[in-house]
Length: 239
Image (spheres, rainbow, N blue to C red):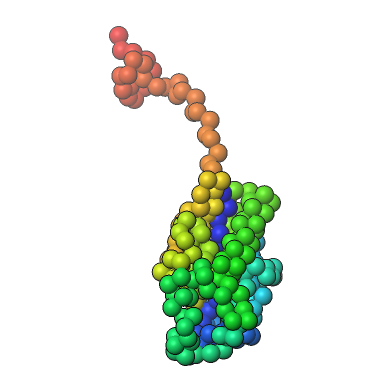
């Protein structure tokens, strides 16, 4: 089956300051740009059959730095959750909102004011990656590797689906800036191969090409007969 690499964008000023960026056009900070360049070094040897991204600028900037030779395809299904009136506010302020414990403990019931529900975010993100995964495999074969760049909550929701756990448990999953999470979908179930990977070697994800079978070597005409080890000019059994 094809292999999906989920890349979270690099750090932004909102991440550093403890704010909720949401769908605002927040860009990478200096640390985030360095993170994007570093993950690019890890991805350099990966034979990526497709690269798709959330339309938000922080994801596009991450890919511009990580994979400057690639022109990613924008996938709206990977956009950040629509936090509505919560966007742009400090997390410490939002933590006092009555909706906060619902988001943390019962996110499947959370609907953001003037925004999206977390259940809707999960459904459209999972549908997007499964649709792309099937397309990549159909076009490039079961050994293909592809990459999708998205956001923390989106990646966590996709991981929860892959693990077969309820969305209410997704806050137990971590996806740090510029981390890689690896999922392989199969006809029966997905497999989570890596989670929140910020420094591991990716070479093991590449399926090695099968070796060509070697023809058996013809028997050596000077081989000893009957298992005896001939030496020197001996050509056959001793008399």
